[in-house]
Length: 348
Image 1 (tube, rainbow, N blue to C red):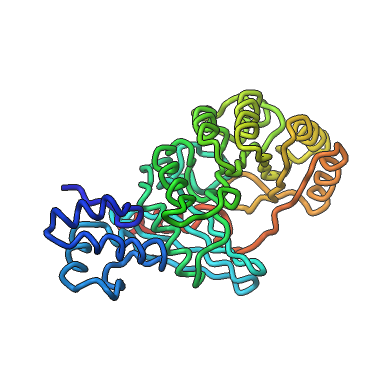
Image 2: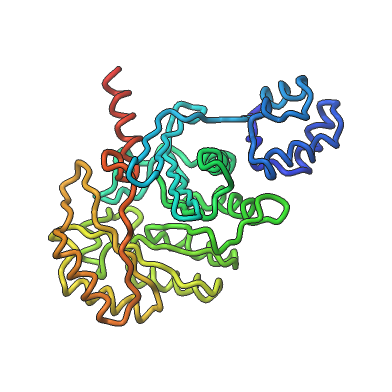
């Protein structure tokens, strides 16, 4: 029998399982309270559950299914980056970002990434597999435990293209926002995509006030082809048309994420084109100065970044620049996993 994940199990599912085990069904609400009230998913930490039942839960469910394999904390701002080792020895990354009175979690949706943006460490080794809803919920719970409380915001901007894994991701979104579970406001959850149009249209059908962020990285298809491989790259016109559907269904403006790469997409002409595009679609722009990995790309100069921001803003578009946070040694998304995979190969 394939194990299920305790994280994400409903009261009804727990009742059914308890009955099959000859256990009292009232325990289902106790277990659910630990999962969704106290943010505990390790049966041996559920103090009012009998030892026999704790053992049964541990034997029959992934609970937990993963562990923290590596932890990097920035002494400058308290950002914590965790590499989680999964039950099959694969790994993903989770970032805990404290800010004033709030905590934001950046969660992964896949082991590796099928998109393979040429500047991004996440897709260096391609896609290994999708994460299950249970694994993503464990990420959430581990992040909350690391923060010492329930987080305020979630961004699905870690490793993977979440909308390719839409079935499992949408289960997670439902559990996170359900009043019977974690009761988070959809407005506090952002889903990022490279512009996977079929997934965006499914996302629009949810009809909830989630925020959509699109990793555009170029104002035209010719430039974008230099950054994103062919396999999952859609024309910008189709991406923005799908994004407009999402905006109209949810009532939420979307964001165009734009990683600035020296000599590729950082010219004033491209800044103006991006601003015009964003303004015409009522979208916001978020500029991300490149965090160098081992790729061929470089970070623009401070002067070029400032000129780009000023030029895009002059079109009337709303432009922000991402505050750079976290440890420089592992700042790029997916870098901890890439380093760990390289060490694995060296040992063979």
